[in-house]
Image 1 (cartoon, rainbow, N blue to C red):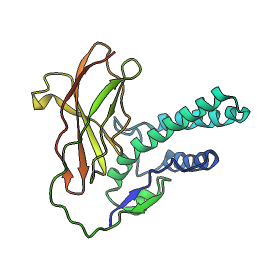
Image 2: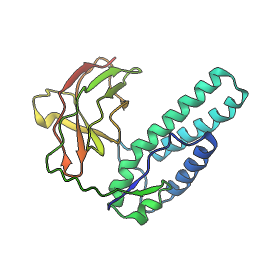
Image 3: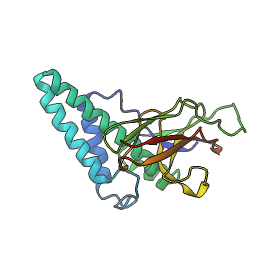
Image 4: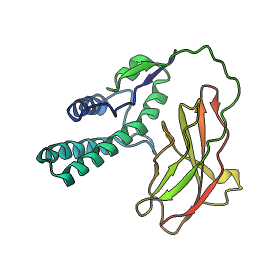
Length: 214
């Protein structure tokens, strides 16, 4: 069974999450297995530290029970968890299944459970793939969860989407909802597509979505 990082942070109480992320930050700070800078589009160590600091500050100000401060805390918490999710695939890629290396990240490590069901068919294309506008220069993509997919590859094309060479990988996600695409140029037309990645490799591409960035 291949070891993986546990990315279920939603059940942590604020105090426990602060301790957990503090351990992750300390573990990755000078980790020889993960020298910096980390390759794009992996979140940087600095982004991780900033997100953690924002969450720490949010937890403190929310102690006043002010409803707006609580909203700010929850928003900072969601952004921090999102970053931890986006960072995990890179950490696993470097470790190549080595549990000892994964344990140096500060994340919890779990084993993939074996199953008696063997499926030799490639993954289907994700359904209901869509992209909507977020903040300026930002898109937010969504798709229905794909059975058998452990992660999802999002690709972007800034030219003719019918030319395969124009496509490039944007990022790998561990989830199919709320996939942020940032750093785009307002007014630019981009195309996006998504596929699942399972135990047998990558599956079929979703329908292409083309949108003009605001």
